[in-house]
Image 1: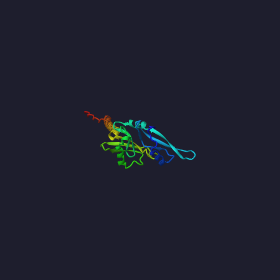
Image 2 (image 1 turned 120 degrees about the horizontal axis):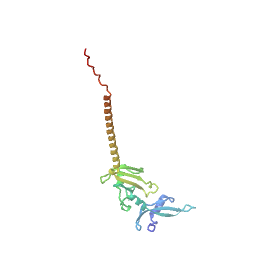
Image 3 (image 1 turned 90 degrees about the horizontal axis):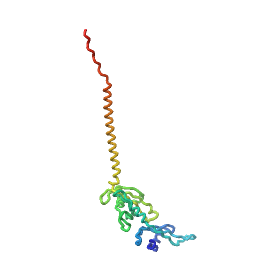
Image 4 (image 1 turned 180 degrees about the vertical axis):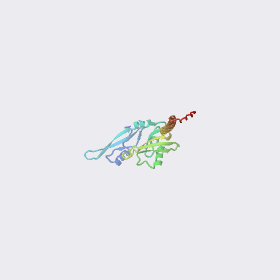
Length: 218
């Protein structure tokens, strides 16, 4: 990547100038044709110790393959998936999706329609129906990079069909309801048994009526 990365591009120097000569600058996601890897460039200005005058910049290239691989491996049950998007909805990484495809995330657009904007909301979730018609549970979390590094306005999204996501909860609720009904039934049977048994004991201890003696013949 170091051989193909062009440090003479205007973006490098404009980025340093806009961030100040003492600030570290990070580029957007780039793609290296030779290695077929995605990376970002980290640029740090070099200043003269005595005068503080700008002398040049040191560039480091960070391979994003480990990060992208980790995201691609995240599979939530059958319908769930995790992906990384920009704040404009462009998918950076998702299962089967790469930055070069520049695909817009349906989930991100749905969240914007529901909440108006993601600005000021670091994390949260909503239930929403996607364009394909299935209601989904969508969670989102801002990476918090955009303020320090404007080229990395990344948001992590997780999406799963609502039916599958809430399935375990519904199962537990059904089990709890069944146990409650069973407990009420057992309580009713116990009350009936106690009532009948107590009534039987009362009959057993009742004193029999006195028998009259026959009259004695004179």
